[in-house]
Length: 255
Image (cartoon, rainbow, N blue to C red; front, side, top):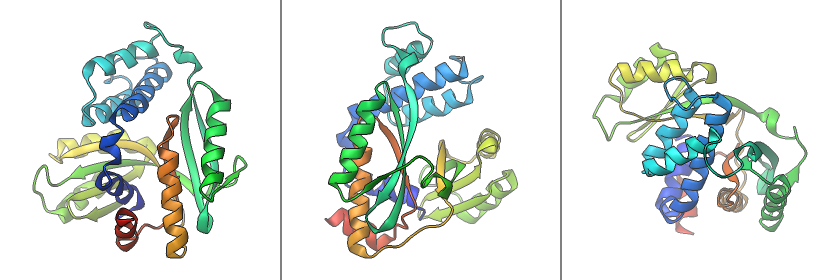
């Protein structure tokens, strides 16, 4: 399984996603606010980024009132300075030479930079300069198809995805991850839905051009650091080039 879905499964198994639902809603709301502001529209049909953000919020069972409030904030209709929100990427290394690309949304750049730096240094990481690791990653679209929702032949789903324009398809158990050129994300997603595929998510992601496999001790430390970073209020996602094996995932969950 790719690092993306493996990491999500780990977080779910450890109960992190459930325990921090309030924090998750805050992050989702920021996504919606920025998508509304940047897209210049509150209509998900006309603003694809907003559609992705709203779909993700609904999948997390975020109340519709919260979603609408985040949209209104992006339009400048309610309190809160949406214009102050900005997206920033931080870069650095985890133990074992694992590259980290940290996506944050903040209204206070100094606070977020300080929190990220402190978390990295306390957990064996080292902050990097802009551009130090970003060149190792490529922007991709990621569509998740959950075969537990609708029983289909994974190989058939793969062929349909490739015909729809997918660049890569990863299958693990009931989860099919479809990777696309980011500019083709909307078109491929629509084709999969039209073909009756149970699409449960679509988002932008950053894929490492090559992965690393440090020794077990450093790999576990790297995973702990990633988890600590993702628990920061201002951090939306952490991308890495760590190769997460099933054995490594089991040790991390067990630890």
